[in-house]
Image 1 (tube, rainbow, N blue to C red):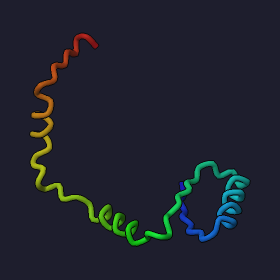
Image 2 (cartoon, rainbow, N blue to C red):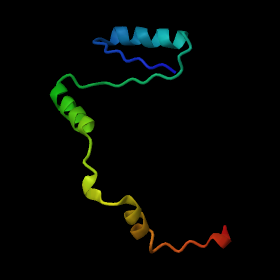
Image 3 (tube, rainbow, N blue to C red):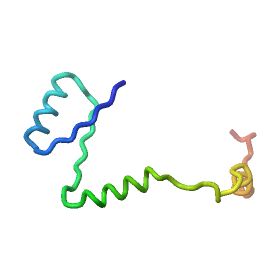
Length: 79
């Protein structure tokens, strides 16, 4: 499966592209609308997402799983 992204400035060209995609039998396409008035805010959000999260302070995952599941009483005989 291939992916492609377009940036289109006017709705007339967008409608044309969607029509062409439908005629070609492209069934899955996603349309997103960016606010032109706030591109810097969107860029800030993408920078935060790209930076990611520091997970080093979360500790050992297996210990967390054991502790979070201590209160669960799972009876496998009833399944």
